[in-house]
Image 1 (cartoon, rainbow, N blue to C red):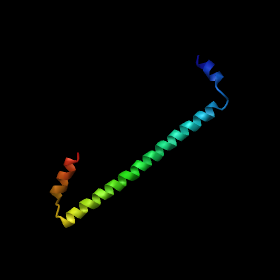
Image 2: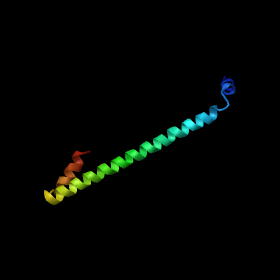
Image 3: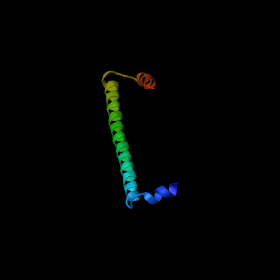
Image 4: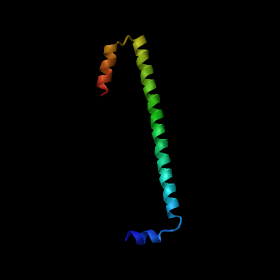
Length: 72
């Protein structure tokens, strides 16, 4: 049965299949990089805000530890 299907595909079928697979793979990589970039920005903003609170509002290490635990 598979042999019959293989013989009936157009000559450019496998080239098209490879191109689609490459496009999907490239999109997945780009999506992953975009997510990583956004997470890095988020974590930087969180760190900056916590640093500000430690300096201006006297947040201590116990408060930071509690915040970290509550975020779990």
